[in-house]
Length: 330
Image (cartoon, rainbow, N blue to C red):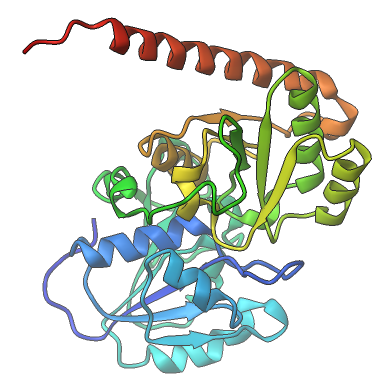
């Protein structure tokens, strides 16, 4: 873990997803939440937080609990074009802590102690200087860096900060969101919301509805193919509800009965966001897309999801029946 000795001039570099539909998303949810929680609980040295992203990132950062001192918008969405400005801002710093693999390209040329908190190393530049102390959160990410010739430390202190996320979740009214009683609410989960394919989720919801489920689906506003999803929804006669959320899905956890994880890749990013949701009592059902052309071309992929939902409902019913049958004591 990063040294907690008092330090002056510590600078945190972090990015969150853009809230603008069809915008190039620089950031992810997990790094922002880790940064916010680590600072809140004193698990990392306090310092100046620089938020990298467009103006819409500010609202997302607030919802994720992140406070910042300065926001920088990358020209044409390219963080590397901020390298000179970041170098100037960190000139007198004692340490720079980078929370996004995507922002590691800002580190070259900074002459101070450097940390990279890595949750998705595939998004890091092809070369990261050996001067950078890398912390990973999953063995797979550690092995990724070792294979690239970088030394890395596996951290176990920060991930538990996401386990009690339900305690800080805001109160959510399902009825105010348009979710009818006795309706199963399903959302699409991704660390980078723009990775969600709304069209595929709508297709899956249509199959689930045809299987007898009374459904409401929620997709991020920045999901891809949103217009196609709406067309598909209308084409089915709108037999299920399809809602669009401008807030991060992770801030709406109390509304969900289950979440579909359409792009699980076994990275620290995927593992941590699933762990966070499941510790908030929201089951996550994986839908791995790496070996197929798309759900709309392979409807059989919905089969395992239907089986998991049936099992989940059966388990919940058994637990409810067991609770009702337990004797009461005066």
